[in-house]
Image 1: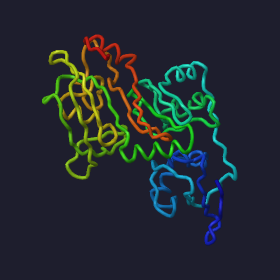
Image 2: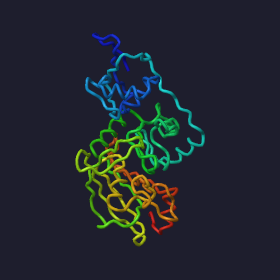
Image 3: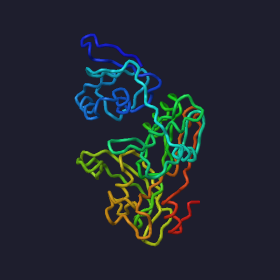
Length: 322
């Protein structure tokens, strides 16, 4: 990363993105570069266009690419900012390493447990992003996040082990070259037993946490294919879900819209989302991810076995994951 002064405004800074920051989210990069600036201030600078990428207004979640230039408003920037190395407890490190489904020089596939957030937030201090040092293995650098799963969703999560792999995987997710199949346990049985849900979604403003709603106008297109694998009478069904778009909480909202909320999803299904005798946790699992290998191009399919409360509930209902 290099630092240059703006000729017209000496206190403005232009920072060039190097290979080490390839595919990193802009908001995470800003927090590392400017650790003493409150996130609210960073958000304001982004909103008002004072922070720009290659001269254009930037969004917090956009991913950076080597060679891009980030403009910062007048602020003190360390000449050589160093990322903090998180300390990972021995138990957490051993658990994460035991969850590796696939590993080579380019990527790691992990079976993320339910209840572990992928990234931190104002009230989330324990998260995978802070434990990635435990998954460095023999690499020069720790792996990088290239996509995410919700905190309460378990299953396949891909990590890039170098900048080239991160760049390629990020492009594949953006261009929908990655096929994701989820398993869900839902209350009731949808009719018809297979089909597509096309229901646009929009965020609901408020302080109660991020929540989505169906939206006829002003929403983002969201499409999910679904199919019933098995059912326990009319009490519950095991669904496969293939999201063709990647909206926040898309599968949860779409299942509720079908009249069959995901078991444990009180946020969208209310009290109707719970079944006596089954865990109250969310029953949503990223079962498989199929994609071209970022270096060789060979198509890979990574499969994550059910575990924990999902495995217990499948067994209770007599469903066989095999």
